Image (tube, rainbow over all chains, first blue to last red; front, side, top):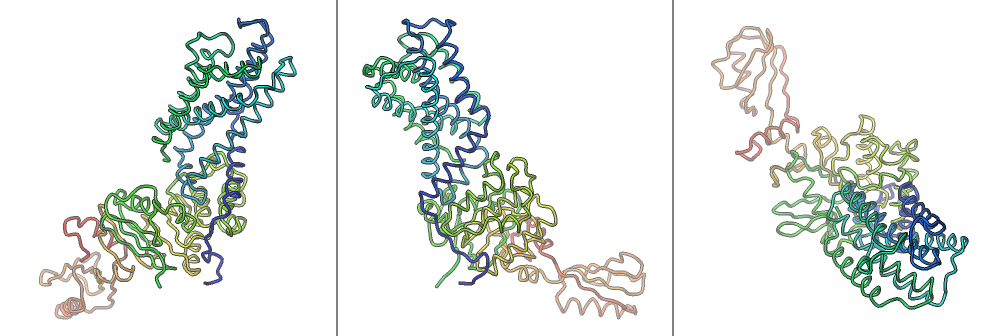
Length: 249
Length: 292
């Protein structure tokens, strides 16, 4: 082998190192996109303080925070896992980023793992921050049902991510952005976050997730069966549709 | 022992031996990029089989990719990341990458290191894409129109780099519209037309096959040319251009005719076809389908 500067010596870095730098890049780029930060933290914070501390909306029961804070937590999961991810992935696909990274030593599975890890990491940080704000203004969560609360959150994240990748794969990036934002607004309105939603709303993942978090975190009771069913169904349908329809370019 | 890559797609078979540069020429739509896309595993071959470095680009995708350096025609990079971040990201995917700083300097990207990709000009984006293709020390690089949009200086820098790749034993498959680029860089040229190979050979073989096709003769003015089998045109008084299939016998015949006409010949210049002439003849000559 010749000793020139460019003498071939191809070798993949250890997968852990590859994933670490890709996850860091995903997080840096998310933090750089102003609208993503607003969507992920600004809106939920506004809803938490607005609907939680004032009487602008009608919520069931006397404890406004017990109703509003879990809903806001569910909302923030949707904004990051669904809206943010759909918009980002749509543009990354149209810019050829998915195609190019998929053809690097990162590989396509590596790219999906990195995206998932970055989304999960973001969600954990957002949930802890918003829960801390909630506690600071007077929300008193129960710790007894934490595990089922995490369980429904994982299901919701899977469903949203699947839906996000599905939209980003079948629509143009501009259309994806529009559709993802519209769905966000509709869910926010109909999902039982700021005011009571009709019982049928439990078919929506946001309403089911919010109700499940309210039961577990605010009241220390178990997750209603219909919420498990709704979120489970959404997760299965969205993830399998995304696997089927995923397009890299 | 065999080095390099052998690929076959729908009747097209290319061999890029180790440390050689193959240029793929052809019109837009001739199938150059499609061919690369199949070799890069972005799409399956419509018929037949594709092997790159002995591997199937789709089935053995993850094994093959670290050994390839890929430069797409455009895009492929996060618009919001800076040039330095992107190159270092790709470097981190390799166990022993080239030093990103060396590539940044070599490609004149130092002052754009902190510039976001979408703010770079077309030529600057191309230079970064080239750096990304090379940073993992690949065995084989696919460069899809590497110098498109580059200014003259960047183009020369790129040519120099490609020459260095060859010297260091990297195999290069590049597509280009620039005939002088192919003539200057390529060890082998493949001209594609409508998804098939129309001609193949070294630049010298391709231009030699076409022979001398223009003779410039300076002689007395006013000679009448009807009596000769070749097209003789007096372009300006005393300057003649002779065209036709000019092999040695033909040239002798032409000069004999000048002598027989009683003209004093003071200068004879032959002009050989450039790759461009060959290419244009081939592309125009759609039905004949062969190099003359």
